Length: 619
Picture 1 (cartoon, rainbow, N blue to C red):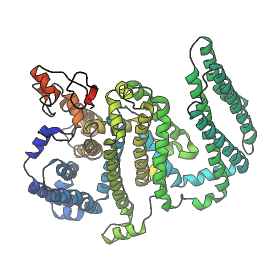
Picture 2: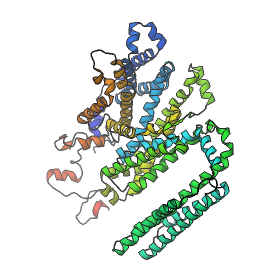
Picture 3: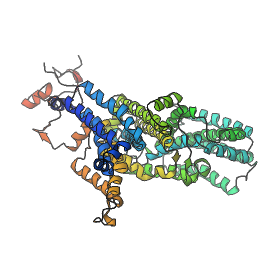
Picture 4: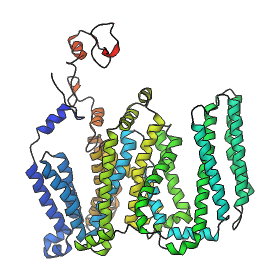
């Protein structure tokens, strides 16, 4: 009996891999040479003693080339056939020893390495949404912003400013706000859960309309009570505002009533609107509870003038994940019924909404001025270890964040691999390939898409928090549309659906944007025969765009493509009607009879022997 390989790459690819020459010695030699070159090119004292050679090594283009060549160690350790010990030596040696040691002499190298890994994590998160689930999200950077501002507000002096404002302008006493918020939250959450239970939706549209009218009336009563409460210490809500909010609550109900009079079925829409009103009450209750807590804490604003204790950094790592995932669900709920270009446009708009909110909520985000003085975690034993190996005090936080991001990348990659091999990962791929077929096979579309959105958003949230700690400053300009497009280009350039590919894509794009293209511009800035208008420093976006266009023309599947993606893009490259990377099983089972022109093909399972046997060959 002939056995076949169970690997996803197929026997043909496995045979090619096995026929590769063993490159253990070459891999180790390449690692040693590039490591020595990196250490020398980033040692300022040694470069000063090398004369002309040191001047050459200081050249920005040469320096960028050295960094790229060194990072290729990890890529070759993944691609080449070599002994496991050699792969481990290169991976561990490069990331845990050589790169941090070179960063001790040049802090910008550590900063660059952290940026590469942050964008690699972002690309891994977006790869789940775009590469696996097939949902084109152009507003992905919004989740990155959520994580950054979650820690930016609490890890800086901004929190003290917020508490001072609420102490001076409470709007209402803290106790009534807290009581009203708790009531709204409990009632809204209980009603939402009750409406979600099976069988709670009435079958009669008239009854459903009456229920909706009752909820709208209750919402208006809560609005009036809110106006009565929040008029102490600040200007009360205007009558115009009350009428606008009331109209917004009543108008959908009127629209559904008119549609019913015209003979359209509105039962499902009415039930969804009632759930929305219940959820809105719960959310408003949480806002009031948060407001009351701020009023209670206002007297202690002076004690946290520089932000909360740095030890809370670890708690906020988890909170940033949850906050970004929650925003992902809230954004995904109203838009995931759309597909393709429509989904891309609306996610782009919602991403811009987050940026505009950050720009206009001056009290919480400091507006366009941004939040500065954001602290990082304080780990005394790690600082002592860094001092012992020669790092200066101003480098402690960079070294800590480097190893933290390295750990987070490993964790995110592990989660990605496990999800890809799980039932939910197969459901994402099924939705990407054919939504109708996936739904017919029992895949819940909305729930599965929301999981993809929330998972990808959570990775962006935690990286946003680390980004804020690294930069010690965040502003809306850090989260513009170009950043979302840049992360998307990393996924496409590396290979959609391929985890090593998107990491490579992130490294290539980040190196191009931060080192290679700026280095070319700096090196050619004073060359007399290059006109200023044609200087590469002025044309970085043009060069980057040309590289992406050329890449898409020459290798559309990406640098390290996913096998399935490669087969989709090269269906015409077949040998005898069978792709070279796929198994030809036609000579086995019932397919063999087809090749010979005899027999029938039965459903999956054991072959049927008699025509009257049950489908699938069940005995």
